[in-house]
Image 1 (cartoon, helix red, strand yellow):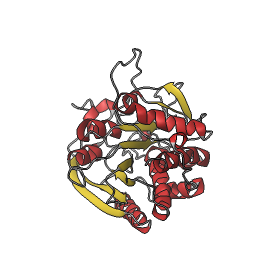
Image 2 (cartoon, helix red, strand yellow):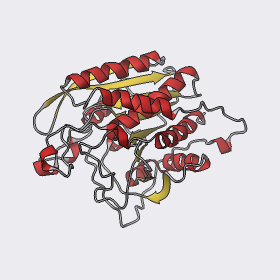
Image 3 (cartoon, one colour):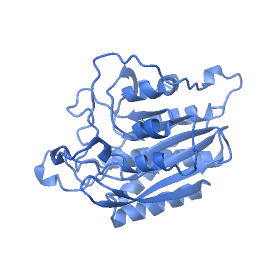
Image 4 (tube, helix red, strand yellow):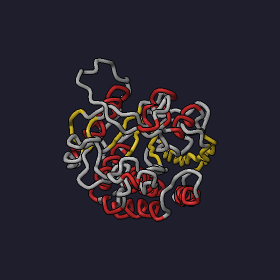
Length: 325
């Protein structure tokens, strides 16, 4: 993903989707939401990091893929491994695997939850030039989102919500061209696995009420602003998620303020397959890049992952999912 934030100084006056969601406040009957375990989500994150950088075409990548598939199956999901050879900006053919885990697959009303599971092959934002060709461990930028979704999968497998849920781990997201490469179509050099899936969904005609992308959701004292592409494509979903977070006491994480607009997996889910989707992504308005200082460096390691942040994200999403009818 080309994670360079574009700040919007003009108000976007475009209509949002007509999608509506139901929150707990609108229901007469109290919904029981399973408790999210941040310890479990942290362990799932750590397990991915233990494989090493999950760069396509490496043994660590293959080992982690097998682990993710096995865990989803263990939790009772119907799993599809969508394999594809995807060509990167530099001509490298990436042996990619999108991993889809479906719960209550016969339900016509569905929610899509997704994150990328690969890691960046180059630490091109590292302060030391000698590290620029080293791979990124991607504890926060990739593994944290997958860790949250694995814990949600564990809970959903034990207690099904009223709607069907599809959890997708997209591959080859972070193989985008560095700024120095000056390759043509650099924006579309990111999110390759997502672009492929959106054009070739795992089920013909697949659709969902809405989608939620998790990206960099484990950082210490991380803040999540209302990403502007999300507001354009799915404002009601943004409102629902941020409202749930506030009601649960997580307002210090979910800032009710505009962030930037970003090219990320949700863009292609919105534009290609037409599912209104949002991006929950860390944003630091005081940072040069808009992200934590360890983003796309060799320092994106487990020491930067915080259980409190994982809990805020996971608990909020559990309430969003279980309050859908």
